[in-house]
Image 1 (cartoon, rainbow, N blue to C red):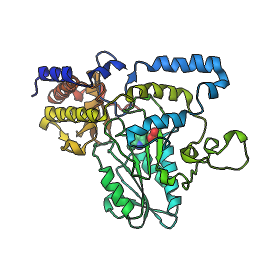
Image 2 (image 1 turned 90 degrees about the vertical axis):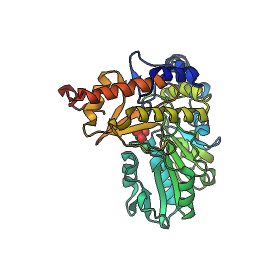
Image 3 (image 1 turned 180 degrees about the vertical axis):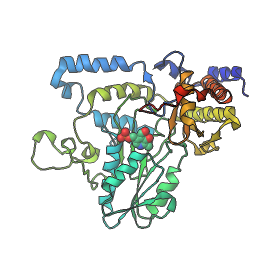
Amino acid sequence: MQDRDRCLALDADDPLRDFRDEFALPEGVIYLVGNSLGALPRRTPERVNQAVTDEWGVQLVGGWNSAGWYDQPLRVGDRIAPLIGAGPGQVVAGNTTSIAVHQAVSAALRLRPDRRVIVSDVNNFPTDHYMIEGLAAGYEIRDFAEGRFDDAAVVLLSEVDYRTAERHDVAEVTARVQAAGALMVWDVCHSVGALRVDVSAADFAVGCTYKYLNGGPGAPAFLYVNPRHHATAVNTLSGWHGHADPFAFESGYRPAEGIRRFAISTPHVLSFAALEAALDIWDRVPLDRLRAKSVALGELFVELVGDALELASPADPERRGSHVSFRHPDGYPVMRALIDRGVQGDFRAPDILRFGLAPLYTRYTDVYDAATTLLEVLEKELWRDDRYARRLAVT
Ligand SMILES: Cc1ncc(COP(=O)(O)O)c(C=O)c1O
């Protein structure tokens, strides 16, 4: 087993180590769920308080102009863009990932009216699949594993699988899909803020900001639209904030130019304030170092757990995102026992134990301590305690 002192030395040498101080993490908890809900940046409460007290409290409705609320979706979109390989004016923030999936897929279907097949991955995060089902009247839904795109209108995939962390090669798949005449939509929820994402060749991309980007619970999502579609793609959720002149209050819909046509409605101003505080950190993150540390943390975890559990993630770190998953038939009580001992991971049905490694605040010693506790829970069968069998509403 790796020695804890070696992990202490790795933490001391870590070029990202100072970022940890920018997050408020509770004492006594090893938090390995940054892939589900990222930790709280220390500056966020002050920024949200300012938005409430100084902006809402003092500027009142004038805040739409004077505090820049109206421009949040595009301003924040431009700040997210470098994290996904996009340029200015190509990303709009707001709403939820599910809504962005709906917008991207329905726009893609209209751009390929002659084709009647939607390709998706049956293992994709369920909401992506559910949103497709909602749009699929008159369409066949085909699994990505069949590998046939020549009659497909659109292909929707996640770059990193939410359960296993398996990673697709975005450039290779995008090129293959587009060569077959289909449009490519990427969901980067589990890769943005964990890898150097590059969706610039794709037609559309969607993602959330509450995981690795630390935007907070319910933080706004985002939608990337390749500029080649800006003039022709239709936003079927044609709300007033995507109108060319919302405050003319015209009775008919006239889409705005550029990415603004994909805005829908009143931005969630307070959530945007929290997200902007998090992006103040992300503006400074060197993505190659982030990825290098994520790989190193993952390798350490896999090595420490060894044969005690079946690895559900790819063994090759290049094919893995930033979480590591293991299988256990009693995964739920095992995770509950672990959480009771201060190691917070999560469980995904039917048998996956998931550990998210957020390189800005996860230390090598955290991985060491988490793996040691996990091994103890397994060896001593501490998970067999009846208290751990009862399912909570959110796993
Ligand atoms: C790949 C993926 N897509 C979408 C979502 C969630 O979508 P929404 O923001 O609409 O809740 C998640 C949430 O974990 C996800 O992992």
